[in-house]
Length: 369
Image (cartoon, rainbow, N blue to C red; front, side, top):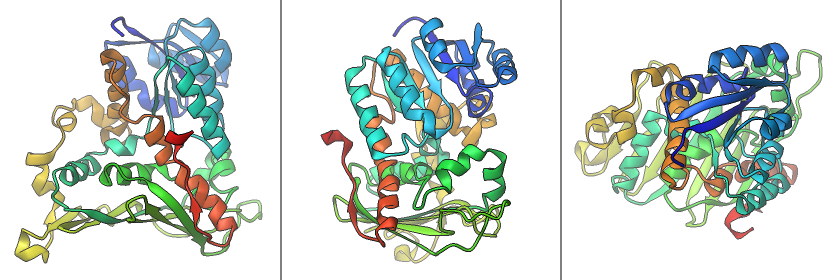
């Protein structure tokens, strides 16, 4: 693509607003239309994005507005249907996470991507977090040796967050298992290079909380998913959004034959790393930041100041910019449909496993569909 990209944003007054800075600052992009189901929100977003048109219906927008690209920032129950509709019109799609709610939905999405001339990219912003990209560079350079274990956690008291937007309840806690995996499995997947989770087993801690209406959550308070990769590595993921506790956010560990990494446990802590050929044979910790001068990716070395005002400390900016870069250059998207499903499907299969008393269940490879 050489001309200015004509962008439509759906969910523009909600999550879509997180992309307002890159969408309006990038001269390669013109926000042609915005869409929100609430008229007032659509009008507010039209002003914020300096858009030509505002809609309250997505299908009307993609048929009537002059678009070649759409950003889908709606609740997850709309991701696949809206992505498929846009791809059938050969529009490029940047879609929020997770990719879909069911395996059948994900199959429909792959079919639409395969039959469309439009590009699809999953907007997993945590893949672009500064610290996780720095770890990925160290892995790629062999500093960890062969990685064979990772642990990730998403731990926060999210009950109030769910009540503020009840659609979150529908897909986060009205089903059991790992319902929101991509912010964790995205970065971890980059650390395991060409490997992918091939089977999972999932178990929970039981039900100990009720919602403000006195109804129990279908989601167990803490769920833990074990994942085995095609190369027989182990990935452990914990999701807990119901327990009474201070938020700990996202936490990670990575272990290889030559080194290990542990993310900060709390806001006043530091990300730490240790390698066998340094620090008294790997028996002491260093700050991850010690490696930034040598290994920080170029996209973070040159990131503009305005990017830090976007979500994930710049992650929203970079996920949008890499998508636009791919459209302009004709290169592959940074997170294509298959990588996007590598971080989505294990969570969906975990929901089958927890319903089957922790049975190990195969995770399909979308590349074979």
